[in-house]
Amino acid sequence: MTTIALFPGSFDPFTNGHLNLVTRAAVLFDQVIVAVMTNTSKKPLFTGEEKLALITAATQSLPNVTVTAAPQLLTVAYAQQLGATVLVRGVRDTKDFSYETDIADMNQTLAPAVETVLLLADKQYRYLSSSLIKEVAQFGGDVSSLLPSNVNDALKQKLAGDGHETQPQ
Ligand code: ADP
Image (cartoon, rainbow, N blue to C red; front, side):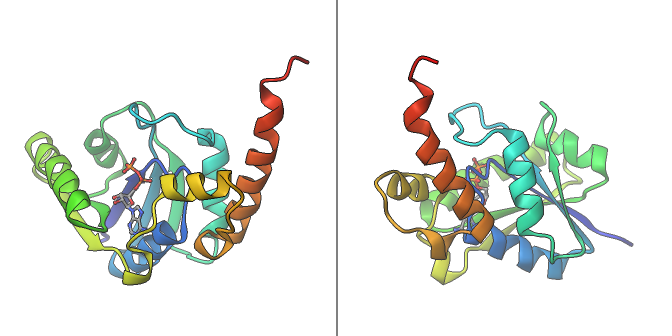
């Protein structure tokens, strides 16, 4: 039986912590689908299309990994649509654990056949979050060792461009 795992997230941006998780999930499952979700409580820096292109390029060496832009749909409904029986998420600390177990419990209620698998963040990436990356990069900090190189380039470009966005044309 082929096991398809869905790894949903907002990936704003996709970090080496996310990449580490996908790489490990790709060993555990036959196919891994990274799904770019719209998180309604977060205002994104990158568009869905930008994230899709960046994650596709960053994971191109992983043959059983594909990347999709998730439709406005419940994660479990999307998993069922794709034939995925596993949802992969990462846990960095107790705060994540509590948040992730709430989501997993809700998803289990909605779709008992979809199993959530929580992978512990690698210890070298345990402190790493997309928000922290954005905060540091915004003030000129070097985050190049924490991001896939294409994401680092895109982030620099995005932040350099941001200063001009509010200027009248
Ligand atoms: P969401 O808004 O859905 O939480 P994120 O992009 O912030 O999306 O995170 C997606 C998943 O990746 C979450 O399960 C999160 O815990 C996990 N994750 C985030 N950063 C790391 C990291 N450094 N190492 C491992 N897992 C991580």
